[in-house]
Length: 186
Image (cartoon, rainbow, N blue to C red; front, side, top):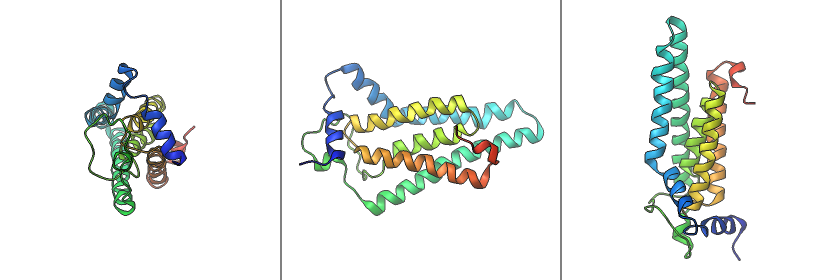
């Protein structure tokens, strides 16, 4: 009998093909191109647009914010890569036979989800400085996490742990690198 992790994956993945627009939405959400585009927009906003509007010391503070955001995402990437190598848990399509895999098969390990971790890290770090944009990015991260399960390349636990790492690493780094009043995630 499959465990709860597998049963949830199969339940979500069994919807593939029944509603074509949903397939397309999740394919776009999980695409590396989409993730790179969102990261580039956030990078432009925090790295160029926001500092450009400021002068002197305030401009340097805004550049510091941008470095913190992308440093948090990079640190999350490193931790996820290390955990993936240490745990070496196979992808669901390597162990389950009846999955509907909608994307090219990744050749790395499943646990934890890098997509979930990186989108959550971006959302968390941005939320420290721009609450509304951070909230939108949290919604995007959630859609990406569900998409990774839907397209058949991650178990729910992979996504959940990815979300925890993506939230926890920027939060931890924030305690060392940004002011306490900025850190309050409400």
